[in-house]
Length: 488
Image 1 (tube, one colour):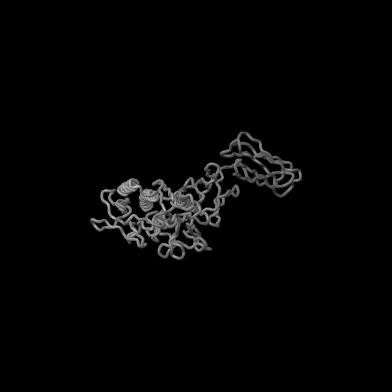
Image 2: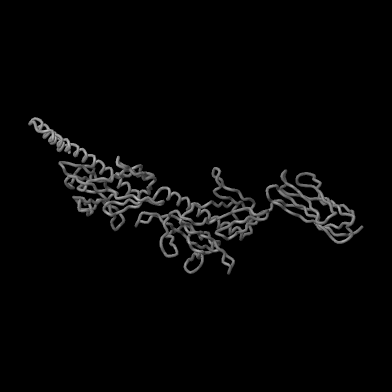
């Protein structure tokens, strides 16, 4: 390039000394501008080649696209794209090159590795080989470098130590290095002029899917623990929302019972294409088994191990786990599933036998609701099926007697004891029949007496008084005293 520029200046000086016309001087100036444009073009090509290698290496380095921005010229035409990656920073892919400019691109071999190609004006992409060995130049190992020398395109595969001829740097009407870039929620497609394309997952989609895996696997483990706990007659003592800032992102249940977990948490699952993995009750034997429900399906299908259903509360390793894995064919991520506790994973297939891409879509949350429904139990809804969780009653109420004999206009005092009573504990006595009166005479927070007074009209039959005890937090216990007429 320096040779061409020097030659242009010598010619210009000669023409001026010879008194040539202004027109010839303008032509030499045009030649100088053209040489400058070729230098800029080779610089853009080298920048584009580096960007191509970054795209190819993103598959091996688990790098992801975070942003794609078009670059416009003064006429509003897209001339380049700036692509930002999570780890590799920002690269630029330029569009405009001359028809006679060789185009450096990439193609994939049968083993899934990308190698460099060169395309001339005939539009045919030719593999680039190392001159000394005849081996393909793979994009993951070498970044070619372009320059113009003595009016020719030259390429180097060894950081400029040696150069190979590619073609004359003449230049004419434009072509395009990158044909187009298509952006989707889960990946970006780079379409090159030679007809090839490369898919790179987006960072946001991958992160959402990773979060979904963590939440779903946690929910599946919790669902198994919950149903096993219910089989062991466990009772819930509390239900607490899990907060992240001002948002409720899940809930936590605490249990009492022998051989059951003390705390189980459920999280709101991220919406994805991941099919619903459920625990369904088989009415024929009353046991719970794992099942899968695909988007659009009306009902779930049993998960089978061989020809047998997988029971969810028998073996420790029968809880399914979901995962993500990149497919070497298209470089995108697909759902995987393990039915042996995470020992081995396989592609999660839909009801037609195809792999399921890990993208966003509308699908139900494995745990749709978990609510407090009364003082006696909680109800959890799992994919439309209600699971009733008994509540533990911590208020132990003891009366000296629960059956008394009384006459008309009689009074009876029955001592009581309330375990775990505090300042929030409330006691309400209620008589079943008119005329009977009842009240509480407290000694302290835990001890006192239930006093019952019968009316003058109580001449026969029976009645009752209920003593309702509340902990002030939603838990209530009731003790009934039966009254029988006995006369005096």
